[in-house]
Length: 186
Image 1 (cartoon, one colour):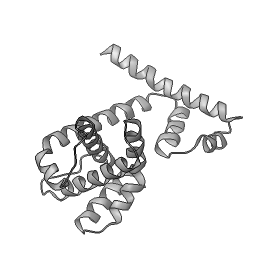
Image 2: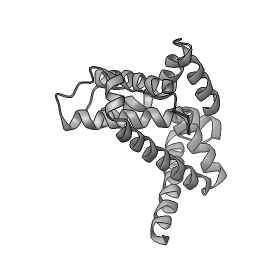
Image 3: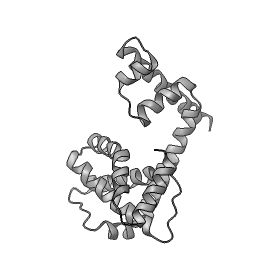
Image 4: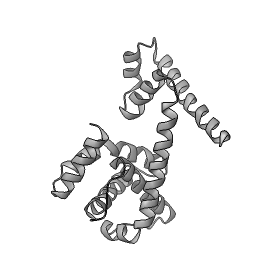
């Protein structure tokens, strides 16, 4: 399902007070949340709690009359997740009793986090467009489609798992070189 479809389904679904959007967003973005929190001193329960709070904040934001979806809902969710998790890490006693009130009190901070996340993804998309088409496809399959190394090996007919991992590394290195060159050229 593409981003526009996800956005419109979720927005429409939230406005109808149905639960379909929660399921769609969970399928598409909980994995990222879980990886992020596990890498940053959290556990599965933390990831589930933070993700649920993020969806509730998103729900409030989507139902705000002045809110317009400017980017993929995933960017909003990721921005909110990161913001909530970093706050929790700063204060181990942090607890979001009411996501609705949290959103109202931290609207500007959440919006800034979302904008930063959107800027990051836009820059990354620019870097990816600058690499070879083979690497673009490979990166898409690994990081967007979440295909395993074995699936990559089969799809691209690499002779071994090691060759598939090596190609992934080379493609990521292409992105790093482009990023570093753009930093030094500005």
